[in-house]
Length: 476
Image 1 (cartoon, helix red, strand yellow):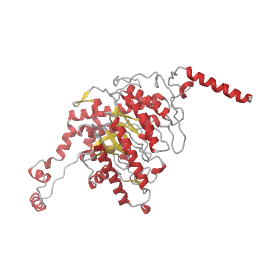
Image 2 (tube, helix red, strand yellow):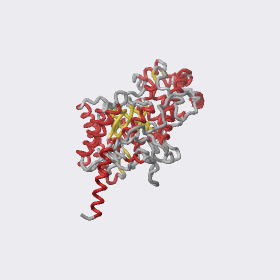
Image 3 (spheres, helix red, strand yellow):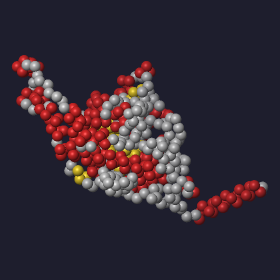
Image 4 (cartoon, one colour):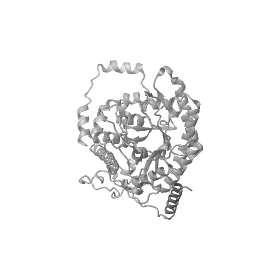
């Protein structure tokens, strides 16, 4: 045997023996720790960060709540029950800071550079430590974010099962998914869409993927299931049969609703509207478009909407408008809490920090009586330039405090009553006998013409918009 081969055999034996007798490493979240690349991880992922607690508005501690006090009762409910906050796994644990113009800027200490099942399990452990320290009870996921793709659907499902089994163990009895979903937009097979693909094989594959994702969401105790059709739209109508694609999407959703009932999943099915990006036009453009689609295809009783604030602004609306449209149609189910930059024309997924916008959001939530079984999912990511582990906590604390402050402001507005009274007075002419007839659909045109001739030219009072804005601002 050659000396080189003898040396190689000797080194292999040493590695084997050392691995057999070595104790499992204990790895703090330290990028310089040599065991950070091992398959095992013991100890904390976020050392030095304790459970986040409420310290009140006077606190200067960035790792404490100033406005969100989970068990404080406001307007008849605990704050945590109004909010039902959720951590988005994809942005929090799969976000890299990369963009079309630059490479990743975030490399969390627990990452080993692979997309293996072992790495997926390690991320899951980090996820639940983060959730518990943040003090929330819900999380959200895409199937392919929590477990890697494999060469076949069977192998991919096995990967997902392995990670879900760990998630089930880690979440215990107090934590559950707010919602789960299937990632039907990243893989090249979905370049033409999933439910709206021109290829029947892709349609079938997407159905199989949703079937499995719905099963694991149900297994984990998830309370909702989301459909975000990022590729369900078109780039050009010249090569698109839009009517056929819409019909296909409806059949897909009808099959999903049927399967939900078949497996005994009691969660709410949610559609998440978005006007465009990555497609030129997405079929569920906004809340009104989605409501019309659901009614047309007989799905209005099977689905509600997951309104994302940044998607609202991309469609030319405010988040408040989209929430009110969904609420008035009886289909407000969940909110993806984020915002965009008014100077940027794409989906930037920033944490909501605008107190005025948060107050308008909470006005709709309070009018809706809450969101349960939905809640607020932080579909928001750190900025590319924010690269410290503690930034994950700071961003979520800021978002939670902003919405909590919005809820407190709504309570002020309700207690004061001035804004409610202004709106009541504006429509008080309908609080009459004829107004009641109109609203009941009992006043025909002949009767209304007679009244118009009797009354003459109507007097039109001021809408008091500036006063309404003043009253709203006084609560902030």
